[in-house]
View 1 (cartoon, rainbow, N blue to C red):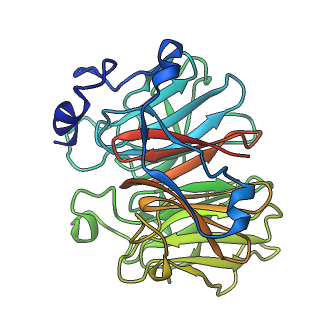
View 2 (view 1 turned 45 degrees about the horizontal axis):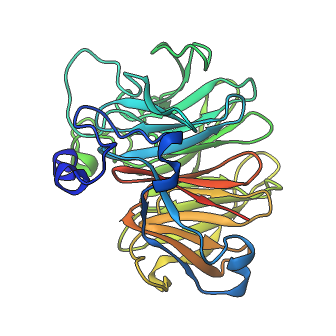
Length: 342
């Protein structure tokens, strides 16, 4: 197991605990653990991240981290650890703590694979919404953020009566519609799972009445999803190693999308320590795209030019930006990391 293998590596760090994920706190700020490197490929990149910036490890010892979400009211970060069906909380000066369990699978029959929550986001009322792998739905937590409970309301769990695969990532439009991706990664048997009902992997829009509308079934492994700042463009990553691309679509007045075009092809990735298919993504208020991949976070401008890479050296699943754009947080396999932004 990844966690056990970390014992050998992390034994040199006094803050490692074999019983829980690592906590970093104020007493350790002078000796924060760092990993990887920042790789600049274009002068524009250095207007976003200073050349001497370090990649900080905020916590470690997880199984497979995902779905980071910055909570401005409270100044903390939530993120999923999918295999153990948990959401964790990290706060400056306090470190990491268990926030919610179960987070993505509430069934009584024990199951393997990746049952927990994946992408996390807030609705317009500030409620926590999550992509639930195990329960195969988009759901809202029916409890305040300050007092979390594993009580959920289903927002959508089907398309035309067919059970969703395993919602992966999601984003709200300002009109309240929920856009989400539905690959098979949360199913125990993945593409060959006998319970798979939808014969494709879709990108969907859930309207305010809870009805799911298919946007496209042309992305073989839809994963990350995000809007441009003006919401006129929808970006979707494909984590298919045979076709590792980011698509961009024009958003229509009725909420649908056009046929789209390839915005970025990860086959063309350049720079040390990056390779493979894109995963999660976020778009900054200035329109820069931070897209994860095996090896780190690829930074693109709004024209799709690869400016540089936050090279963690680990498979990196998703990112979050704080409200002021001061830090970029990333879930990177067994780590939670962050990078200071300019």
